[in-house]
Length: 499
Ligand code: HEM
Image 1 (cartoon, rainbow, N blue to C red):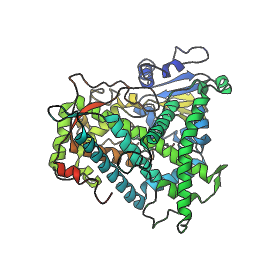
Image 2: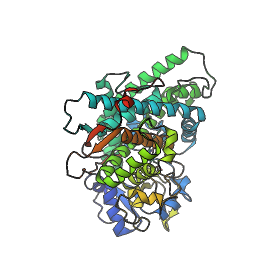
Image 3: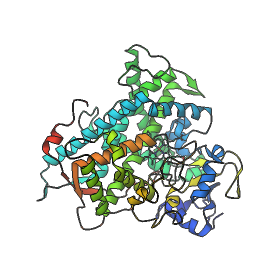
Image 4: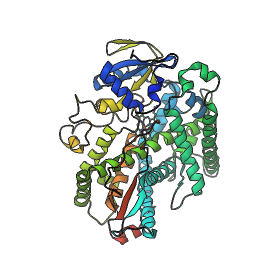
């Protein structure tokens, strides 16, 4: 057990301020070694910090550490564990996970998802071009100042909402007002923040009893439920209006989104006390929460790192020019040719994993790990950031060097089997959205950097301060200079008839 625990709250102070928790816990690993425990109020948590312990944890012990903790936020906000991403390990989680995996990997839905990503990115590139075209604030070189966190957020939310519920919330063809779309993004962000900030109520049962912080959680839950409910009513009505499908994914429906598929699969059943509508909303919400902030954060840090390393930005542009040329939009089938761009994304995920402490898990049985006896009920914190910056594995661990993934670490991928690089986690509860997320990130970056020239607005290096939450968001806006790179004809043909 690490020293420095306060009475009642234990080491909770470490998880609530500056530096961010993954860095505070990372410093403790220097002192206490790759495995140590801390107290979060009444709860004991095990913190693991190197690849050897992570491997033992997610292979030999994975079954006993595949449950999530029942956090207060989950109870109030995520349909009381009907949301499979927060559910305990068991038959309900297995069933939901199977349905989600089929949707995200089934050949037919892959085609639909590919189309949604393609059109989402094309529309966003066109929106950015129009904003530049209409801007009265171009500088003498033709650049305009753009806040990129906002642009990435709109793009990612459009793709994810279209995939899950057939809705486009921002820009061309948006189905809601700008105000309503902003409100929805705010509610999702608040949820992620509440989840990430280790609430006192979670750690200290007495405070749970007096409902500490619960009011704000309930309000956010209500806001999200109103949106999900309206989507579900609309989807159910749509289904009534057409021939009912079998109790499998309807094969001949060109416009199947996730909610449609769930209505068909669940077919009104109740599972473990949760009715079909609640399960549908909760699972859709789990995917929205899992997909949006993580992808936006990764896109944002990638641009920050490229602007701080102009030689890397130049290499990405060269690769795009030689492998794609300047005439056309980039498709998913082109991504294989863009080895350097993929290495840039891996290096960003190594230095800035969007969930630096992964998602909270809990041991459901006593076991041994790293030679220590671990008690049932202990929480697990995997310090992904510490593992991914371990000097025993990575030369110049804090340096941004995408080349390492084309040379010394060529074989290392992010899919949970190489324990020195685990941005998507590992084991049974590994992120189910790896391919969806990576495809969206690669395609967005490739097309953005192919379509626009970018530069820093000043000689000051881009600010890299992170803020506390479930994801390590950039604390300040990402304002950069942007100018179209290709001929006007290229942007004017967007969006194409296909979208
Ligand atoms: C850069 C993109 C992403 C990163 C870095 C990321 C990272 C993670 C991590 C670290 C976990 C916890 C895994 C564990 O406990 O071992 C996780 C879980 C999860 N992710 Fe992702 N994720 C990303 C994108 C996505 C996308 C696109 C989706 C949905 C399409 C998604 C849905 C989920 C869900 C539902 C879970 C909970 C899974 C479960 O408990 O069974 N994520 N993700």
